[in-house]
Length: 112
Picture 1: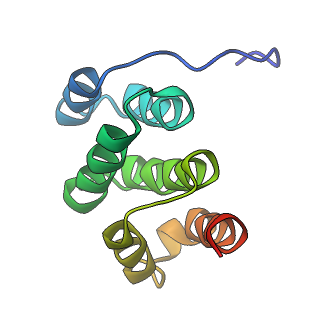
Picture 2: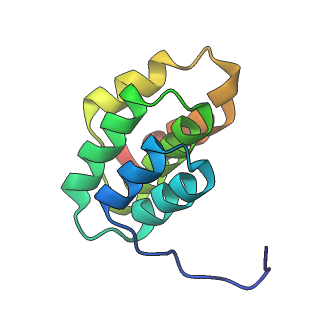
Picture 3: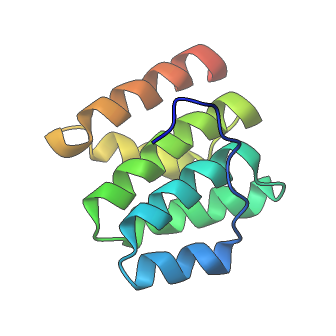
């Protein structure tokens, strides 16, 4: 990994789905985070991330989705109520506690 800033890669939802379905975890995580920062189809992104959050069994990818939701709150100024509820229901799971705490901070700062 380089210490030099690298702009997020551009990746489409179909490519991300393929990474998730084929267990290419590193590529999926990088793509999810990149999409949360630079995707032009913000409504499609909210739908996609919500779907992955609810259906993906890979804890690392799910954690990346929670982090992506924090980016989406900051960039878009909104997030689907279903996503907020779903993330809050994961609150007792230590696997996600750091990402959830950051997400809740973002909601508190940018949506209240």
